[in-house]
Length: 397
Image 1 (cartoon, rainbow, N blue to C red):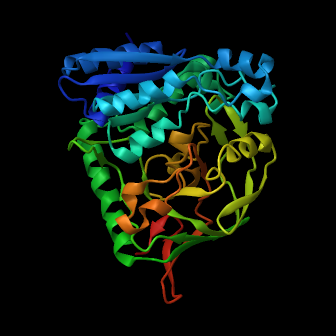
Image 2: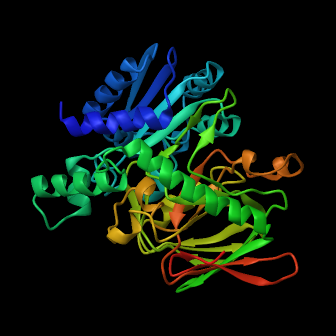
């Protein structure tokens, strides 16, 4: 086994904080088998009771989009969701891999049709997150096909090695003690989150090229960062890498327009470039793009909350991803290079009891990047005062 996968797996198991006796569910894509086996090895060594690996095959999804009745594309067999909820009932651990494996699988498909099938995403996943019923970690996984997408001017072998170097850097695997390095960075992010929470802004405004967007916040809202704690007290890092501080905005108070600063890649590798969205009264009323806008329009129509926001995340310029200046075509990496928003479900644990029922309860969650050094971020107080929050990637609070 490539020892780099062993290091990646050790970090994934550390991030999820797998406990002795836990069932560990691993979600992978075909082509990520070596990483899945490495996680099984690391999890069992840590005392896992059982490691259950499921594989998503993008080429099977391609056949469905090409040949199935379009009216059936949103259907998900009930046992998929039942399995997810069963993991929550048993306080299981979850580890999932992101990263492109088959970028060509959906390249020639009707984006409106491919957008109807949200697999491998399950709406029940949002319930697991909201309930804090599993300790989990999503982590990037290098693959040669992903590497050639990111570095098209290199040979496949050169690109693969370059991707490993970059991802090892952003994952802090190049540190003598990656776990300690993440504890340090998590502390920095949580300090920024506390500073934002203490200001109790009524709204956040983003202004830059192609963007003038005002996002209302809940009065009881808090800003979160870096790590979560389950309902049974297990602290874990839900995403690796992570460079964001985030909150759940008021889904009824979003107005203005925004232009994405990086391509959005939907699960399965449909790439949406040049995305532009206009909001009125909280709802995305116009979705346009240079490529594949219909794919996001389809996702935004899946339920009533899918066209409203569930997350606002701010990213400073002091992480390890943004300074690389690389578009990775993977949301887990790219969203931690730039401030972003997400259509779909929000996080009820980021608001007080009085606002919990107002949090977006959509069954989908789609992040897209809207930040850059040219985008100014201001906090708006309840008295209407405008307070600088981010300038050129530097915190102002």
